[in-house]
Length: 440
Image (cartoon, rainbow, N blue to C red; front, side, top):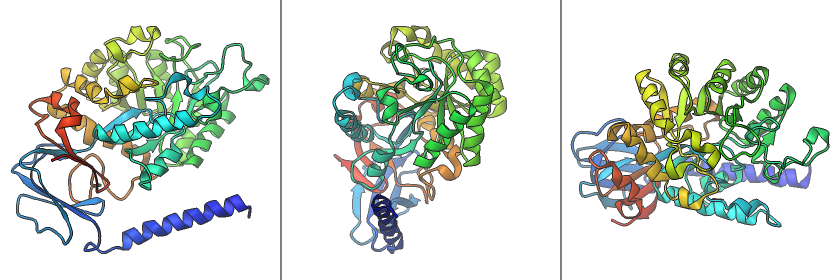
């Protein structure tokens, strides 16, 4: 066995031993947090009566309007009637790219690129987002650092590299560069593992299996043009049906699913024909396509692209179109999810909560909160056994669920705008049973 392989294997066994040791602790020895006198939104409804919530270790054990005795050495917090809810989630976040300067990968080394991602992971969590689905990027190492509590950040459902065809939405090599098949160089973003440009069924299969090998919980492909890519028209349809089916089949063999970047009717149709069950964006869908998505049980993972959330002049065609798409989705009872898709813009990354609040223009405050908690969590669960957080539920406050929650000095069911005031109004943030913010 090579020295590097032996070291890595030893690290896995050691890390696994730590996890087993933590699981073996009795409840008396696990850290505990008792939150008293909270108004509880459980991810689906507002729970009657003021309640008390007990966290033991990293899970919720009890929610009751009756008095709960505090375990020995428990941290006791009096919520004083404030609003307690599950942590927020973002179904289309870019851990590596959200706040990265465009030139961060053009420096002599990618240090700034990774440092920015680590900093933004902490900011994401402090905005109340305790879980994100990472929709392209080499985030596996940062995810592991977060999960091991080396750094602060949300739970991560990683896709790994965004899989694109040559000239597609994920091809960032300059136009003068030959494709690798013709002796050309791959883009720096591809070399860093953030994108994988492939052509033909064998390369698609290899790319999907490569991401699964690295730990992807779901696979993302590009089936149409996009806003930030230089070469592909927005109306272009990408990947052949055989290539899409190959990606879906390889993911299905591992018990998970494929989601696809795509806006247009033709692109969505092909993605659905190929077995894709999470349409990322879809703002240019027509009613017939939305109705078909509903019949197939496919998800509409939607972002509020309008105004400052439009990244480029190329994307102007999408301005405000999400509103009608969501209305059609509601009409035909499509499963819908909330995401942001913010890229290379630290100023916009800080407006993640504002993007969520925009949905309340169409949805009720209750629907908006359900969407960003238990609703998104239902989509995340499609990853099956590739779900990196099996053993507990996300997006809900109930016994046995992971202890991810925020306490708000305000009631978002009455004033959804309070979600934008996270610095002052999110007075307590708990993730995986750990208090990461407490300003009560």
